Length: 132
Length: 132
Image 1 (cartoon, one colour):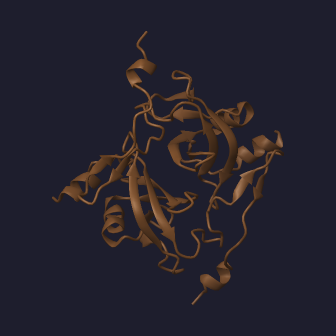
Image 2 (tube, rainbow over the protein chains, first blue to last red):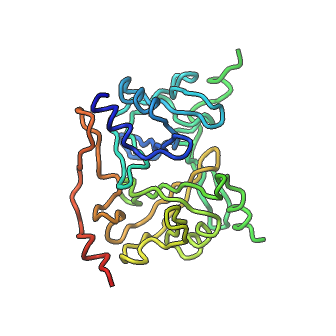
Image 3 (cartoon, rainbow over the protein chains, first blue to last red):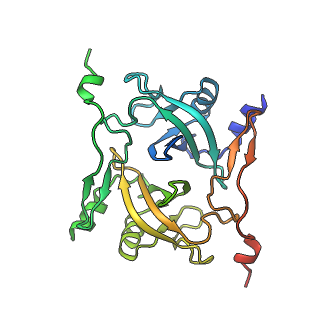
C-alpha cells in the first residue's frame, strides 16, 4: 500500500464508508457545495486533480462536471482534528450547483424565518442538462 | 407552529435527525469546523445567535464555547439546493478547534501523501479545558 493509500485509509468514514467533503472556491473561499466521498472517490480526486464523489441518492461514483462540464480543479485538501471531514479548495469551472447557481448555498435565512434566494443564476439547467 | 419552526422542520435531516453545519468565519470565509445539528439545536442557534450542536460522540446537546468560552456569534445561515446541509457565517471568539487552532482544518495533504499541520496553535488546550 502506498503512503497516500495509507493516509486515505486512515481517515474516519461513516458506517456507509463515506466522508463529507466541503468544496470551497480556491480564490474567494466561498463554500460551493458539500458532497460525500469514499476511499475510491478521494483517491481519484487526488490522482486526477478533479473532484470525484459517491452519490448517496444514485448509489454511484461520479466526477463533478461529467454531465455539465463544470469540473472542479483541486488546489488543496485539508482534514480536521477528528479526521472525519474534508475541506477541498478548488477552481470551479462554470458553476457548482445543478440548479444553475455558482454555489449550492444560494438560500439565506431571512429575519422572517424563511429561505430567500440571494444569488443569481449563472446558467439555465435545462440547457446544460439537456435530455438526450 | 411558527413560520421559523416550519422552515426548520422543512430541512432534510438524516436518519438520526441530524443535518451537517459548516461554520465559516464571517470575515475571512475560512471554514472553521463542521458539526451536526438537530431541529432543537438549530432553533437554539437561531434564537440565541450562538451556535448549538448535537454531539454524536457524547449524544448530547451543546453550545459551542460552553467549556472554553470560545463561542460563535451567528451572522447568517444558508442552506443548499437539497436543503440537507447548512453553512453558517459566524464571528469566532477565541478559536474553533478544541486542539487550540483557529480552524479544525489545520492539516493539509502534502505532495508526499501525508497530513501536514499548516496552522499555528492559538491556545494550549490543557489550559483552556482544565480538569476540575
